Image 1: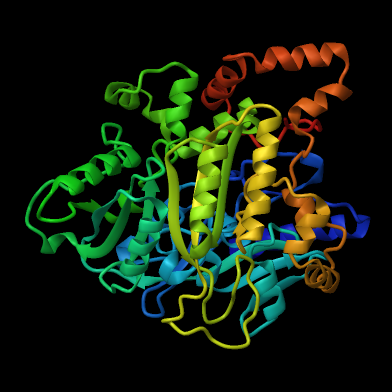
Image 2 (image 1 turned 90 degrees about the vertical axis):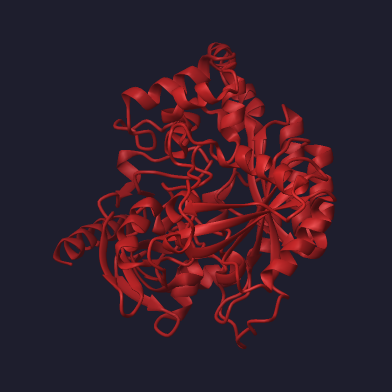
Length: 513
């Protein structure tokens, strides 16, 4: 803890300098899974990237003491020898514990355990004036609940105690593939049925078309208790991308008279099954570069098919400006209307569907808030369907229109969107959804009013990249148009992954694009 405490003291001193000068700062973690462009400079940033260690695992208490920049693959690797694992593990290995807490992390175990921040017992946080505070559900509880999903607007989280679950010997996941042939209504009904079955611990699905899909239900088991045979893996270069394999298994289940087919998967391969190909965004990358969609090409280009490299490349290329990457959640009753809208306005498949429990014994909603009454384990009133919309387009003004209309529909249906993605609300509309008065009170109490507020942290350019060209000189407009010509920006982003590991923080004082 000595090294940790020394780093936190340095961060605290740096924050105090910004506080005394009333100068807003950014937090540099070393990586990101946000799709927003980075605006970090050396001069306006607090570097927390060295807070990247698992400090302690208590097998008896089933907790881990973790610094915020520990990525999911490192956390899982550290806990597995103790036969324990976090209840919620984000599906991309590079997502960090701090990112899951300060952002939003809902995965295939979230129908049982809710969001990642709900699995945190307490945090250490450096607030706006540099003070170092411990916060939990019973100590500084307003700060604890307020810091969850706050995107660093109250301070810098420097330590987290994470709950853990016990695992069997040689842990694996037995994954059952239930085919869907009647769209999202059937999918929701199947999810409701499987939610009540204690056999399963993981549950999500994929829509390959409006009416056709698969529900994947996972049960934690011991590989030692199964007959010898090849386990299905997804992390090796010659392994299939998960969504392609799931589509094949869904077809096999539909044709199998004996019932749905199953896989036995090493638990790490299951948890990070969407890493290679980034769900299916890798498919669009192959199409962009005109690479054939073959097993050989996926093997040959495996290095650039992992999400860490893909995020690096897309950030540097600027192609996120042309991609819709959104996760939104609505109550089950609104699922059909949401999917109908996405089908008509976006028109690309697959779509990811995942049930999430937004109500637990302590907090409710996508942004953590105290609850006056504990929720019953059998109360499904807080269940929502998260829908992942990932792919290029729509083009031009249709892109902004689609994102605006998606946000409006989600709000109308009583849902919310994950704020890691580009956000196009007007400021007025945003604060009608997210409680500004409570947040402002917290920011005042914890000396963070000089920092960007939540809207300022997550907003995108509502005029769109085309609108920005109007304000540029003719030379700058020409350079921008050349940059956007295929495949210049894509090649630059790809090549940058080979010669430069840093892509968020500029060594100069100029802003990153």
